[in-house]
Length: 279
Image (cartoon, rainbow, N blue to C red; front, side, top):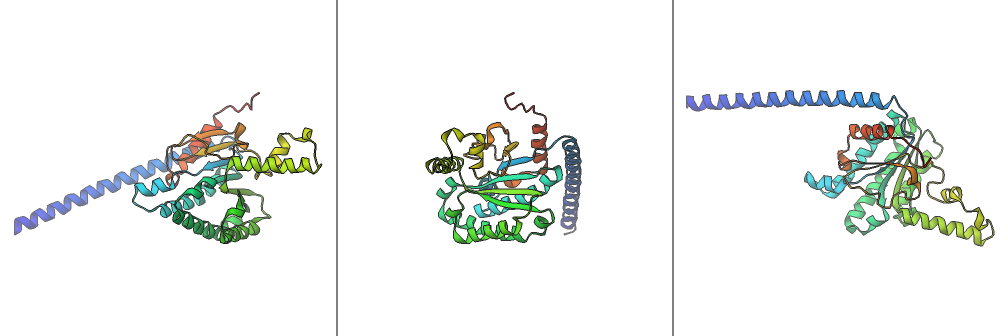
């Protein structure tokens, strides 16, 4: 009995020691991470940050599957990450963020998942409209896409958030929902064709500026940087007309796992490129 007690005490002591070593290792890792993050931030702030960053937020479902969560939990984690991104963008001086939240192709997903995503959108827009941070920093919220195709309750929530922030212009947060780049261009062509048909403009009046004014992003500059998470290397029907001279950056991290250092590395990469615009 005494030997067994001695063994148990020895085992518990070893486990405590192991845990202590593990805790110390974690503290060291966290300290190193924070030091690297601060160094990156300092480096990025010494140069011009992109004014407009567009992000394809990809990987919510795969992130959830890898850690044993359901898809909706992955989407919720993705929403939380977007809220973090707002802070990061303001910290480095980026004034405009445009994020790809739901494509026209996403309607083809499981109906139950789509229904839950719509509920998440509804909740998120009401939250955004009442968010003190949004009002403190005067963040203008706008949705890009076929809003009329969304459920009525989501449209109402969008109207709430857009209405509460319509007079703000310090920062811009654009959410591409029910959005498709080809559909956007087709709609622009139809609008311009209608103007020609009504005699409001001549065919010779059609130029890049007119097309740009006919897009969802009419009042926005084109993105300086387009970033995609999840490791996929494609733009997936996102801002097809606007990205003509955008810098592209792909990171092999699922969106909910996207870290501040990933964001800062993307900006540093952008800053290190020579943008000639064909000149």
